[in-house]
Amino acid sequence: MSRSYSEDFLSSTPASIDDCSAGTRDSALTNHGVLQAERLGQYLTKRGLRFTHLFSSDLQRAHKTADAISATQVSRPDKKLLVKQLKLLREQDFGFYEGKPFYARPSGSNKSGKEEHRAQHNEEPGFQDLESKESLMSRANVFTHEHLLPLICKDNGSTEYTVAVVSHGIMLNYLWRSILKLFAQRTVALAPGLSVGAAGSSTPLEYLGGWSNTGYLELDIQPVVSSKAPSVRESETGDNAPAEADVLTPMAGLRMIIKAVNGKEHLQGLKRTRGVGSGKHDEGQKKIESFFNKKNKVG
Image 1 (cartoon, helix red, strand yellow):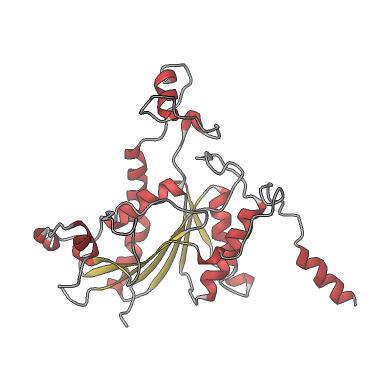
Image 2 (tube, one colour):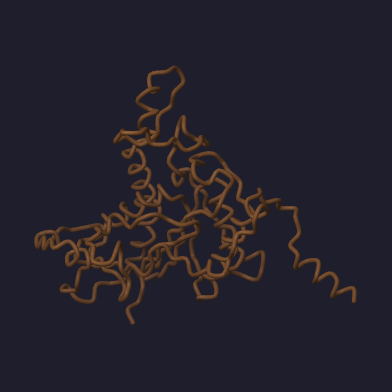
């Protein structure tokens, strides 16, 4: 089995109060969202994963998810893996639309409801537009080059790292593209049995689709065994691009295996409790298990 230089997990946040339009609002997790985060941490730990580094957005719905992962990693409080919270990993700033309801597509228009609304109101005083795609890509590149790349290239790859990054759906798409650009085309492949997009389609790997709450992307970065390793990107797109393999990339000598896309195994059997599940989580609220444990001790 090839030795990994780095195994990376990119995870989306759980359900929060402003789930669809939270943006940079510091929305609290719902009760159901807390259960999703706990399930994720327990699942990753049961798989035998021991994280060396944990990064998250500084918004509470992200860093509390990272805390839930950290809490399952060790049995001693003094050994708890610290979470590095970064503003860089925040969700797209929706500007005027932060926390706003969905705008329906106008009848007979090819614009989305939000685009139509923006066209009508962007000249009004105080209107703040959405954060641009260029800004999102810039933030993703800064994180990749200042935080991930130094770990992977540290000690010439002699040390293995397992890294988790907890961010938000839109931002994670840009972060993935930033990581993907570090690798030569021929050195990126899907794990056996894994597919991207609809059956029979040729979806580019740059576009992996949406992220479910706590859905994760699992990446395994390994030394290149053969210069003729098959490339899923090449076979799916039909683009041979022979010269691209010769370009010196930051990850020269390494390959990346995509092992899971929007992984949700940890959510199997978890159902949202009607009413209560959508409510804001109260950290002071005791779980029902604590009452049973207390009763057993008294008896």
